Image (cartoon, rainbow, N blue to C red; front, side, top):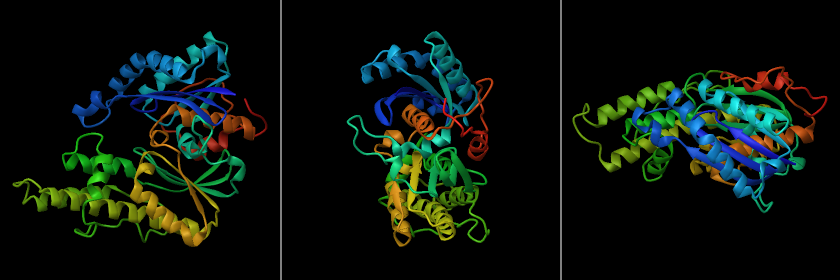
Length: 360
């Protein structure tokens, strides 16, 4: 099955081609340079760029995959969650493409894409988690710029959010602290690199919600505390931070941010014995997070699966295509009368709306 996967959920225009779970092409046009001066994504600028980039990225994906649009069996499109204007362009252009070439179109939840991204294989068929080897229940760990969720997977398509952020997402907190340190936007990856050279115990930062009794996390407090710390260390903003101070602040922030999330994951593991843990989202590329998570899983004898490439961790069309393939194999789809964007779509609401009697 040849699937064209499209994702315009935020500021990356991504179109990919998969043959079943094998990624033949995964093309992404970044808008970082467009939004950098604003310190964040401007929705209407994102919409404009998606419209301009869609056709060139589509042609690039088809060329890299070595196919024509006539070879495509179906289109998979992210309809939510995400920025409303950005989603609107993706849905509109995907519908036009489907109508022109008489192709079925399958709506996909963006976070299901991240959840299933570790199932994708390389172009030669190597790597990737074989879905037939997964035992249920399994656990999904989602950490991105917009979401931080711990998800119980009772079967493909059957998702329950056990814990989530009550304010900022983990990736969002990384980007905001990076901006405080003058690392630009998006700067989460740069902050993680700096942290690798710093002392994670140089400064004490708050560990939020450890006694909350639930599995939720919060990052607004640590963000505010880090801002205050930067102000104090820089002598009330009268001095420039030294390289060592910047590295130590980055490392201390990372330690506190990851510690709270890992503690909540551990709380879930104590309640729900699982053999498989699927990691997805932009923060999944963070090697410290990967190492700490693998260390946490050891006593529980659970195997961690992550995407075969960092490109599959960021917003991308390949994970959307692979999710559509899993839909067809597990025999479920989303029955909707009209394809439309759903900016605030929760993963559990999506799951409860799925029809498990047949595939598209």
